[in-house]
Amino acid sequence: MAKNSPESGLQLDQLPDPGDRYSLGQKIGTGVSADVYEATDNQAGKRVAVKVLSVERDALESYQEEYQVLRDLSHHPNLPDFYGIYLKKGKPRSGRDQLWFVMEVS
Image 1 (tube, one colour):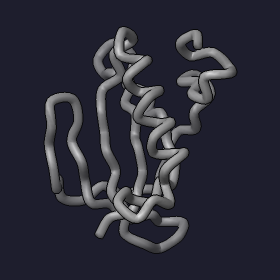
Image 2 (cartoon, one colour):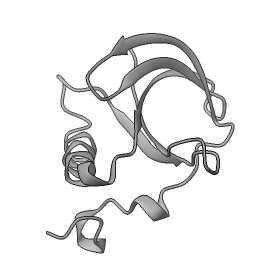
Image 3 (cartoon, one colour):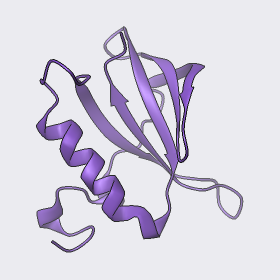
């Protein structure tokens, strides 16, 4: 499967921007490549978790795999419900693009 191809299911350039939908709160976790924040979904009025990672073009396959697991197994009792993925564009010349994986928080 080609990276970032239509059949892959994840098109970075077509992901929506999170805009003002989510308000990030306290950091509740950190890892090698991402931080996780408790957040508020301002549209639905509920608490969510948002995993934020800086986009590395050489890691597209990894993002694809995580997206597919969350999407396909979202209703598994041992995994959080998955609400969506967003691309927050970095500021010109200074910021990096970020992927936001939004999921259930317990």
